[in-house]
View 1: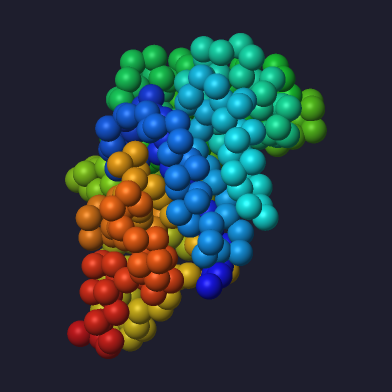
View 2: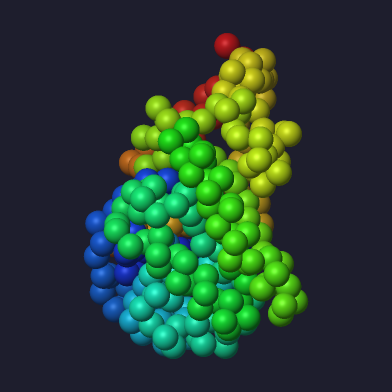
Length: 307
């Protein structure tokens, strides 16, 4: 039997950061065995029309042999090729002078960098000292190599005023003008985090819509369509819709460094666990994937009408 197209994201090498907004959730940094990639691909490949393999789940290119790793990800993929998604490792950009040339060679035109304000607050959110300055250094390295940075900013009640200063810094550095010099646009955009993973711990400092500074509203993604929590609750109370299947032509799975398998809908929590590659039969796991047979979604299927 063959099913839809499968994308597999594997936490083979870990992440240098401990971001407080991480929707995946914290996991132990642990290098998986070298043959883990082949074990995982061989486990799934009989069942899907195409398979795209990614050796990273949190931080791209965190392994030292990132060039060979990218080649192998491509070789392992079946009837498909992995994409870059405008993502790169700012940790590596700040430490490896050859990394930016690799990015150019694989066709990267833009790279997203995530800020939370100025130095102190950004370092706090990312979970290590020096992260803010690494982001600024990465910005300069990208610009010097005609790759456009995209500054993504997450807003909460404790950093909204700091983001005003960050916006001013982006203008002081003339990032828009410098990107236009090589035919690209500079994007500065703001949004709020989700309620998944580490993000749910930030609920006490969620910003209210009416408290977002006016000067930041033009940069806030879809601000006019953004609903308050009370508006969303009202929608849910009057919502008569029932569970629907998420799987269509594309299925995306996250695989932990312990070989646990999850949908990428939300964080890697036991209620969302599909199974384990080392201990569970592949046919059984694939059937659970197709049926979306996991505790969290099985509960959702029982909700048939409004309360």
